[in-house]
Image (cartoon, rainbow, N blue to C red; front, top):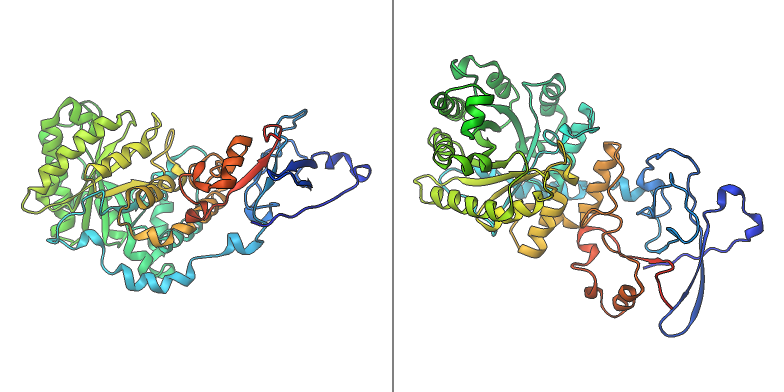
Length: 461
């Protein structure tokens, strides 16, 4: 790694330059090196987000909005020099041609070829543009959504849930523009999200189902109630009618319009714990009508990993023995901080499709973070995932999405955060000099991040 040293005369400093940090570091061999690291920061009291390519290095040390004194936060960084505009502007276009030859038909569209079963084979389903935008202070224009969809496709995710065309004009506009503004490769990955037909009407008369067909994409994901109490008390619908709503809607889209249909079984884990027989009836109604995948949802985010493991194994086993096996998926929320753990536990239990969002954005405390799930599956579980070839672009994708959505990156994010491979304690740094394996679970370059050494009062002698 390159080290840039700068020297300056303290007498020449203005008040705005008082954040210049001078550190003396002693190597373990006894050689003294004087390093004066000049960090130019914004002296404003507001927390303004700076684009990545405008910062002194790829990863910021700390927010410029807080003033510190004494020894607090007196850190310098030894890391990579600024790569300039190319780092953030660099796209995956050089890989696009290769992707066109690799992707082919949609994975779940190949009926009769068996189900995807984890942890060996796992499909990555991104819902950043739909569930992710339900997060507080998260908003994307139609232009942004088109750019994000293209970027996700180039990264290699299998499915891109682009929105709910029946719920708002922006999503309807996205699907109207997609055929002319997105490549065939990107279009092949798009998913339109919606709900089953309304109660007591026919599927062909449901305007929301028609909006899904008007989206003109190969794959549709339907959300359906699978928790008996949610059906009777929230939806205020008879249990038998809910099963018909699932069956009629899936059959209408698959049999009459040749769509690939996934069914998101909302509140599934909670519903299964309360009434497993009814939850299973919801699954069977979808499969018998032609669904290609059943997605088990921990909608309230309150399930524990051992519960997810047991229930997932049961559902995977039940439908593996079926005449037409289906891929079981998982969709988790992070209300207990378990979204990533539950997703990985599901894959370990045989789930073959995992839904999540880039950087874990989403409603309440967020969705399962694909920036943690994807590298964990690739590097620790050794799963076969299509985006594995682009893993070194993961940090870039994470930062780019935050900048596009005008969000401040989470420095402590696993794998892609600024602090994910930052070493501050003297004991740690000394060990890192001998082997990077001493305090790192992977090499940061595997995910496009960088190692940093922080010099502070904790550095030792």
